[in-house]
Structures are given as C-alpha cells and as structure tokens.
Image (cartoon, rainbow, N blue to C red; front, side, top):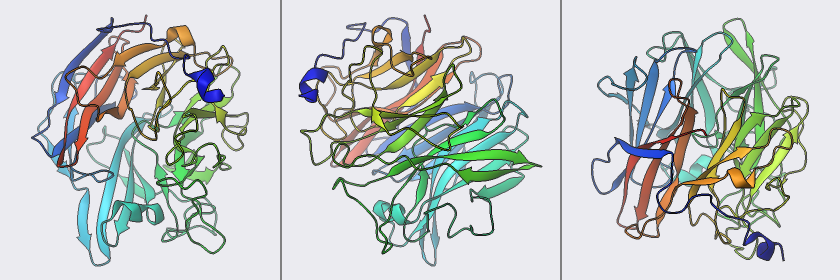
Length: 417
C-alpha cells in the first residue's frame, strides 16, 4: 500500500538538460578497468587553499591507489599529484585505507583529515565488517603536513585501539565513516559531530544481520571536543533500524542543524533481498547534540509523502545563505536494493520540519540513452563554492561492468536560485 502511494511522489522540476547546472571532467579515468572518484576540500577557514583527493577503484569497496593535489587559487590550478598509499602488505594481512577527505573547524582553522583503516587478513572487502576503524590527522598548513595522527577512541580508561567505542571490538565488528558525503558538523557549543556506521554483533560476538541483506549496520554520531591541541571523543546512542523495513539497517549517515537547534540525520536504508519493501531514505532527530535520537522513520516531503530512494549515500549541505540542501538519488518508482542509482537530484530542506521541499527538488544528472543501465550516480561529495556560492558537486559517472570498472570524475556546478 505504501509502495503504491510513493510511486507518484517524484516530480522533477526540470526535464531534458537541467538548467543552472554545468558539468566538466575533473579527473579522467586512466582507462577501462579503473573508475576515478575525486573530490576537493577547502583546507583553511578562509581563502582558496584546497586539497584534491583522487582515488582509483577497480573493484567495489577497495581503493587501489590515491593521489593528493593542492591548490592555492580555489581549484583553478593544481600541483603535481603525490601518491598516498592505500594498501600495504603486513605480516597479518593487507592494510587498507579508505580516504574521506577533510574538514576545517571554523572555530580555530585547523584542518582535520579523516579516513577508514583496517588490516584485512585475506584482503576480502567483507572482512572489513570486523576490522575497520576511523583515523584522523590534524594540520595547521592546509593538509600538506600533519602534527598529530590518531585513531578515534572514546574517552575513558575502558577504551583502547581494540575496543575503541562502546560495543565496538576490533576483530569482531567495526566502525566506519559511511562515505565521503558523511561530513563533520560543528554545533554552536563548539562540539564536532561525525556521523558513522557500526556493524552490530550478537551476544556471542558474531556479526548480527537480522535483515538478511548484503551487510547490516547501525548509525551513530561521534561527538568531539577540543582539549588542548587534540580532540576528546565520545559516542552518542546508536540509531537502530527495523530489519523488517530496511534489510541492511541504517547506513552512511549525513547530519545538519535545524532552525530550533535540533540535529537531523538522514541515512541510507535498503530493501536488498526483499524488493517488495518500499525503498527509502531514513531520518532521525536529536535535541541534545547527537547523544539521543528519535526512532528512525522514512524521510518525507513537507507534504508528508514518502519518496523512493535506492540504497546509496546522500549528503546534507548547509549554505551561507542560511538554507540547507540535500543531494542524493530519488527514484520515480520503487528501487531494488542499490539500483537504479539515477536520477541524481538536489533539493532544499525545510529548516523548521527537517523535511524535503518537494517543489524545490531538481534533477542534476540522469541516465541518457547512450548510457548503460548499470550507471551509478552515487559516488560523490558536495560543498559550497566560496567564490560563486554555487554548490560544487564532485561526482563520478561509474559503470561497474563484470569485466572491469569505467568512470571519470566530474565537477558539477549547481546554481543556487
């Protein structure tokens, strides 16, 4: 019944070539078999200092190699690429890193670089469900050097590298940054919120997957406060989905502040293996800075209508105009697990209700007649351009064929009307 009600809930404002949107290649793929995912981040609280992070993929959930480039002129020109190692053979397996770019704390101008890191015994990406942890590095010179590199560990003597957070035990389960779109948020009290996902475990220590999907996660928020030159961390309560409604739980969260001081979190769900379920994005709200959350519910338009969305990441992007935008996939009909990951849209969020304004949703990109249906418009990061005030969207048009990946990294410029 709900699926039928959602079917007509998507009405993009533009057809054909979207207006107010420009697209250019940011970094091209070196060839068939490799997809490039690349984003650019401001590394100072003001001005045009930027870091570009390029990651090359040949299989799902594995970064083959990464390159850093720097700019001092708002990304007009870039330095020569410098390799950042993302895989290293160790006696106990393959050390893998998934880079998540960085964020500047506007209160002190410090640049915080973030990544997931794990040693995978046989280099199987699924081993990461028991191994991933989150690391960060601090920089005073825009990410060119780091004076502090640490794993994120909850404050208190109980916690260490193998037990970094409540309910997380490396070797049994894991905590990760959901995706490059899961960016930090600074609250008015100075705290830093980082949205994360956690693989839950049963009392016997084995992984818990009550939904029967590909994987299963809870979401949570890490709450950081500056203490001297370092950050002290704690974790808020987990946001736990209903496995009868989302077979992979709550994944890849993104956070933003609302007008009344509440924090909202939008999460990826899934109907993997149970495609008769309606595919949604899910939302929860916190009134105490990310420590406690409302029961997750399907995210809706301000009219109360739910909409279809595939299992893919999304991002809430605050704008200097005081408005809040959301970027992600909305489907005209019920999605099936991860697909289709098109069209890709941008919409405005109502800052009172925390819901999406239906008539402020417009298509950014979609599958063309020349594109294969396997197209994924889902690997992305968005930011406000400091000079033009446009939304600068870094997104790869990825085709994951059985015989190899293909995909260039694009930069979209979206006019804020």
